[in-house]
Amino acid sequence: DQGAAIIWAPSQTTSFYDNTRVRNRTLALPHTTVPPSAELPQPAFPISTSTNGGCDVNERFSAHQVWTRQISTLVINQERDYLISAENGTQELWNIVRAKKLKRFFYVGEAEDMCVMNRPFGIRNLRSRGVAKDNVVIFRDAVYNLFNPVDQPYVSEVEAQALMTNFIEMFWASSALAGDVLEPWYARHANGTVPNN
Image 1 (cartoon, rainbow, N blue to C red):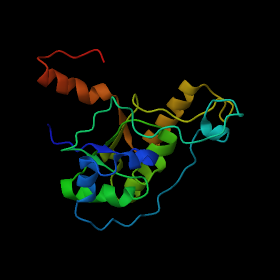
Image 2: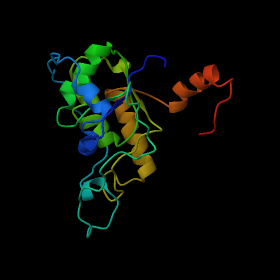
Image 3: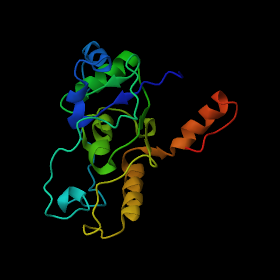
Image 4: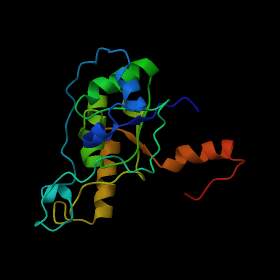
């Protein structure tokens, strides 16, 4: 309602949304030229995911596709939102950026050390195409990391989260708490009552 564009990026589960209105709206946007990617410094992440891809599970379990869609409680507005694929995420993202004249980006959800940073729609790709650090924000209370404490730097998952968020703040983006954005909205639109969740 305030003019933000919500862009869903369900990665390997995009096919679940084939032929939905939100997916078709995204694909119908005018094709735009994607800005060239500039070489940016790529400092190493402060955490490793060498064991089980960062999952804290028994090694006898093999990695395989578990999900077929996003959790059903995440409601996608079929008439206003956008939904991009991992395969063509850079092009689809820039089609939305140009069509909606987007300048600021908030990242909410999933793994900082995987999707949020490294996917075609991720922060590294966005920044390498000219978006300023101050125009990219990650909600640090709405992300996690694929980290196993048996990997370097051998800290708890909570400490690893802090290390990764600090790393992103240092090199790639600003951060905020979801409440930093949502509480003022609730204050304006819910008679000053801010819900607990």
